[in-house]
Length: 104
Image 1 (spheres, rainbow, N blue to C red):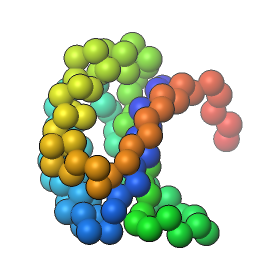
Image 2: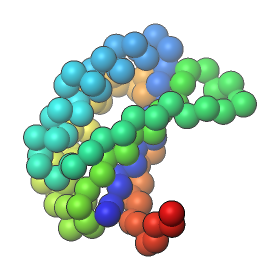
Image 3: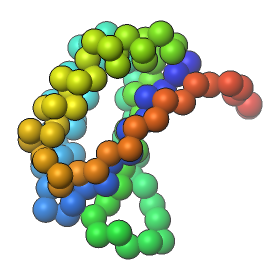
């Protein structure tokens, strides 16, 4: 299993709009790439007040090759859409997570 993890720090003025957009548009569009099997959206809880909220979005993929294909075929267009819609009101940090071991 491979997880494409996107951490987003969202300004308060667009938080509600961004969450609705994620649920209604972006996540469904990500699944249409046929590279994503499951998506999980988490609110990041922190004792630091950074102004706004942070979220982690985990896009689960079958393997690293699906991730590489997404980066090559889809990532630029998807990033451009969010940039056009929200500009610098959301800061992103993207990582790939490859499962090494799962423990019960």
